[in-house]
Length: 117
Image (tube, rainbow, N blue to C red; front, side, top):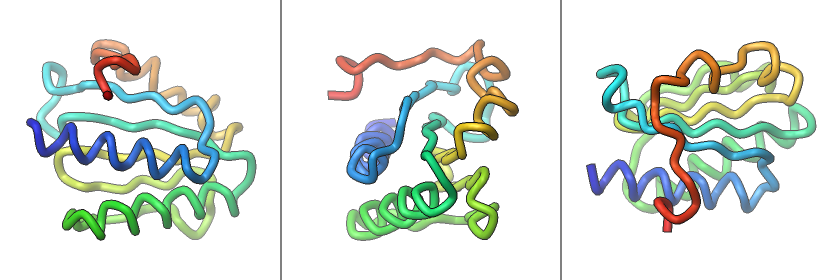
């Protein structure tokens, strides 16, 4: 749990460093067993989305966390990064609105900034 929250904090900072927009962290531990947390963010264009993903991979890699799988990198519309305990979703703005993961996972708990300090 503490390790997963540390990964969340590092990934969130990595997304912020590449100007990721509207970053949300959802605690899904009480909803599913697939992961503990979802991070959701969007970028203005495919290049920015890819830069966000690259930075998350670099920051978490330096901290000793290995990404199990990355899907969608080539398109830059929706990139999913699976770290086991956390899953990072980096979207284009249009795809984020279309897929609306926040609505789908609304049974999870949206974490606020104080919980991520």
